[in-house]
Image (cartoon, rainbow, N blue to C red):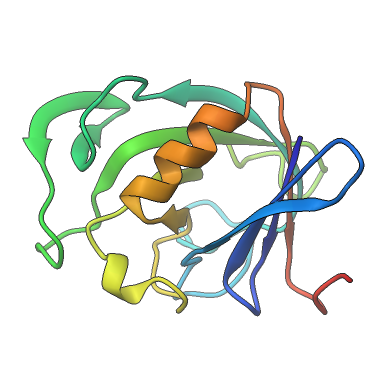
Length: 154
């Protein structure tokens, strides 16, 4: 399994061991663009791996703060940029994105599902709450992730 995020199309592809797409999800990456600077709220690009996963068994929509379940369910459009449902924490594998884990860049569910398909996050890769559960259940820790800002691969 491998994950490929394509920023221009705002999509996330789940690829099998042969590199064939098995699922495509609509996502939101950063409304601030791409970049690696701490505090920039930009989505980093390059090669990553899922280093930790949080939220197994949590109800759909559960809000996490500091990767800890709060017992509260987020509401669509509610103020704030909630980390909801499941968290796949990314660790950068390239020199320029090596600070990704320290920047708390995740793939996670959101209270802004209506904005999926547009750059609207604060650096993370947002999915719908139901789709982040689906992705979470399919990929183990260690799964490779590529985040690209160029032309969509074939």
